[in-house]
Image (tube, rainbow, N blue to C red; front, side, top):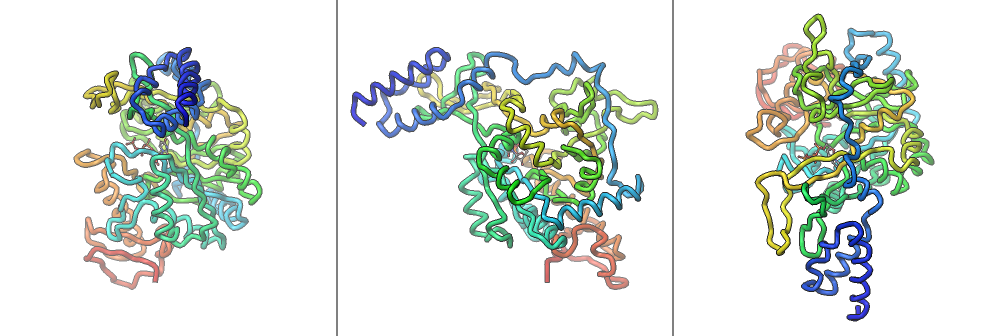
Length: 473
Ligand code: UTP
């Protein structure tokens, strides 16, 4: 690029940024090479400035739950717990299995997060979590989806969301592992967008480098826009996919495309079905599913007023008992409708510590949160549904998320591995085996997807005393 062209580029960028109060992004322009200038210019131009200015201008997307606490009520929920309504459960399982067999179900797996709490240096999906096999989160979840499809005589297509931070490594990993047995054509990878983070006081965008803005993935809610942008929503339609089972990569107990959940969703004519667990503690770090203004909504654990979370009914149980575990089923047509409306999902703000450059170009490692990050949450789709239902599941059967590094008390790799082993020991015992307490046990989804699959496969008096990996023959 000639010097004249570079000058006119800088003038054009200044004209764009000055009225937005973001001209500081060009502060180090004079020190940059031509290549660095082009990179910075490209990044600045790729930002959706209209959306960005609405975020910093107002307290966008923030509902004051304190103010409306009196109008909020608990949700009605169906149950996947066998004893609740066996007849309805059987009908749901049959309906779910039929939809799977007809090839109407796809699986969305979101894996674009930064996994900052875990502190693993690769995409979290690559984390080896199998307590005996050491299988990664990706392997466990893809094998589960594959096994579920084989059971129904189909291949359930998987749509994996990455972010610019996880995309290329995820692709390489999955390719190197031959998509864990999946036909390549049935694994689609799509990348979510990013959004700049700003200084919490000045609302100026932070610089990660002299030629690079600090951006973060736009939240799991970014999935909606990314699916539409990538053309995958359209591809799903052409392929005859009508329902999308949504799960997060950090939960190896996820019961991928569980027929009962799909079936409850279908039998209720629901547009969004969300799986919940019964909260045991008011401060539990799960989203709180509530009814408000005739709609089902989720209040993040960080947003629920403590006095609301602590309310108990006459029997002493928590009134707001339904904790979201981020497992949903969406009707494809519902996603299409929402994707067509630009601002369906608001951005939420979170105060975070972000390493960045100061005005002199020196790197700052803040001790206190210095930045506002913006993120969209997928569960904000719930109130847009004409019909949304809530289904309760036993957490021991379907939820153990890897979030934290040791020595955190919960949701560490060790804690999650213990939950997998506990569940699989329980399956063996139900099938008649004797199993030593605390024994690491792991059963492949190609062998069993639940305890019923092991019935008749344990010899009388069989006992397990050594760590067990029961893989496919
Ligand atoms: P979390 O919000 O728990 O974030 O994501 P995280 O990235 O795993 O971990 P922290 O908060 O940085 O420690 C829940 C799920 O949503 C996905 C994650 O990959 C995870 O499966 N996610 C989150 C995205 O796909 N994109 C995002 O922008 C954020």
